[in-house]
Length: 436
Image (cartoon, rainbow, N blue to C red; front, top):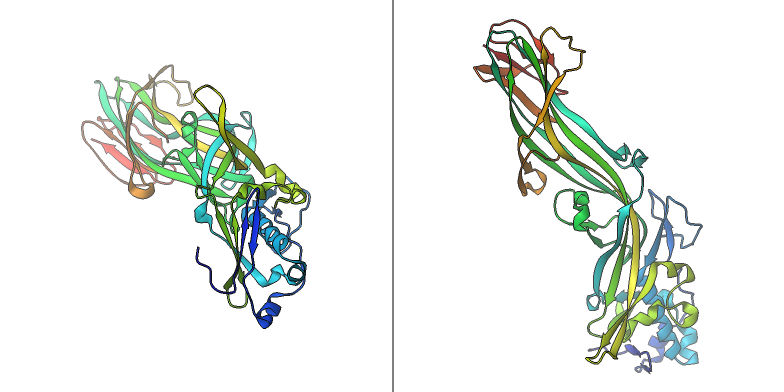
């Protein structure tokens, strides 16, 4: 490593500390010296709507707050303590951390994220407030749209029940405990295959970069087509149903830190001219995750965010050949997901003499052909038969003999003999279908 003149280089090793202080002029040395300051407290509380970095205090943790470990602050405190420890008394007295900016070479660190826990948090029928409003956990059948058919003719009629529907699958994530680098959150969650329904369509991972209110969503367009046959003097009702599923999950992610090169450079630059004055090379940066009273960089309240992973290598005869320790940072949070599935067409029939309020005693829920095109990112294309995810739309129902439709305020289906009208509204978009 090449270091400019007038730069102090400090090497920190688990067994040996070496300090080389290069020559500085008296005038330049005096510019370096001010009062000693204590390291800042790096664990702060984050309000649900505001992160205030101006007050570095540790108030009581509440349910609406998040515990944050600022990783760069831990490394900075540890590297600064190494620097001060190796300076002589006179130089240490004039060192003032307020005169320097700390920069860490994060390219020397590899991070591996693994999901340690991903399981249900709430029972069914539990109301939950989310960034998309209040939802209730559990599943229920939802009618996407329906259409009624009358046959007053003396022969069987065949109708097409077809249309498309847009549905939104979303995942709302809130973080309760995490770590940041330069006050930025960057964690990737690889969802277990058994819970892939919470992936919101794209892939099996969620890239989390917001502490509160991050929502992953995908909009899919579903096209369905089904045939409805109505006997003479009978009526039929076709309805497209989809199962809405809402669940609340809690998860835990463990991020393991590796240092392949064995050295983590930490630079202290003078604020006045951004010139590198000190370089501290941490040859065992895992020591930074000890408590400050144990010559590390952790505050007691930060201990909950950290664990040590020990790796042991065994020889051919089963004896331990080598071992290594790697820091693990713990991220905890919750997510609420809403998905759609088990789509089907429900067809019910009854005599024309039956009241519309009477229960249809002859019903059939059959398979339907479904083609879905993902509108998010303009990519994924899927096909199913008899099931889909699925809600705002464009719909149509037509008589197989001859039909033509135009926009209107309601759906009118007129039988082939021109008698009778059945009305079915389709939310915000309606069509008038006339059979001749």
